[in-house]
Length: 109
Figure 1 (cartoon, rainbow, N blue to C red):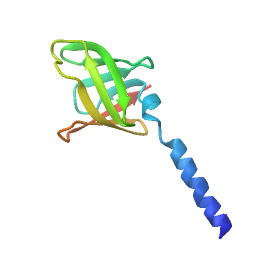
Figure 2: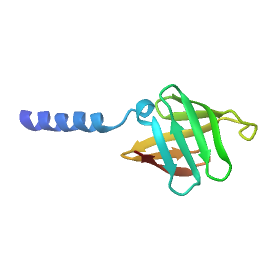
Figure 3: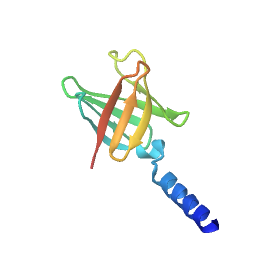
Figure 4: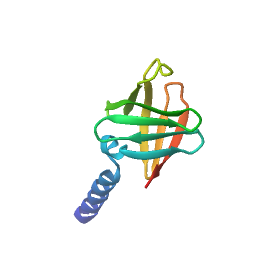
């Protein structure tokens, strides 16, 4: 019984270690699966939002509450910050907007 408990505990710790920390896991290039937008998140808190029709917009981002992403883009087009809930599952970044829409991005290597 004790060995079974230790085995279950070891599996739980292993799974927890595999879950990426959003603050570090988000860093990199992400391509929109359906939406014609890409993101590049930098370690220093800067972000590039690349709209495939309208060009690249620069800004800053922050992760708060463990999974809330706030992007403040330096452009008159973006009058309000972009706020999304974030999930990272393997090579997929899922951004869920306050209205419930989910956009999926794939990590570029």
